[in-house]
Length: 369
Image 1 (cartoon, one colour):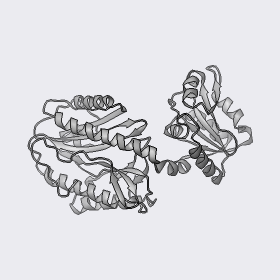
Image 2: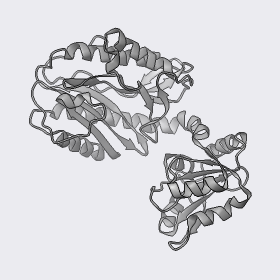
Image 3: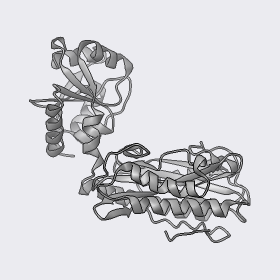
Image 4: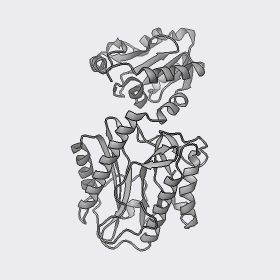
């Protein structure tokens, strides 16, 4: 970003004033990138973006990071601190900490600076101010998410085609990450869960080998120009396990119901209820152990959260997952996930990778994808 993100800063400044706060302080994080267009690593060296209720925003940065941040954000005044200095002391002087200002603090502060600020100022979390602003994506953000989604579809299809008995989960994971990087995406990740491991929703890919007659769950994604993808498909090798067809069909029906329920103006909890009710009617309610979905943007997990009790309304431009699952310990698990753009008339899928595994038996689907 070659110029100041004026519109975003103006909206945040208005929210800052409405919250009755004097300063917004954002450490290295996705919020930092969203507000400045620059990238800063979260380390023990304090980096932050400081936005006053009135006046010019500025950044606090260690000298060894200053040149890179200045190149990304030439519009941003930088307060550069040396290695021998206490950056919190520099911060205290700039924000007049002795006057006990009211601060909105972003996610990612380390304990030391956080406790210092909390002891000398009125501190509140910045998330209630920033999260609603970040949740609705603009046209440029949606374009990046759409490209990320296409890349995820491609990598999913390529990975399904290479699955075979004898490969380890980690070998498949490495293949996925290599394919994302070949497409120009960054920070790829993958959950590869074979056989009984598929019953663990966040299984860490292991040295376990894929075997004939077993389920293979793939949950994968990466970032395209800073914006993420997230897709899950469940495949099998050869003849699927007993009972798998009914479970797969139920999860796929729940996925379709969740997508159908997603539209601007409905509570986030309504999407969860739509998907969950399908699974509960089939008798698998206790085996659906997580929320139906979460927002995706600069972070893979961000608002909105599609979970029971969340009455916040979905708004046009939000992007979230719909990912119901059924997990049967010691046997297998099934999860199917698409990302959805919230629009006034409904949810628009960003993922179109085939649901049918094409690894032996045709997919047991109850509804069209």
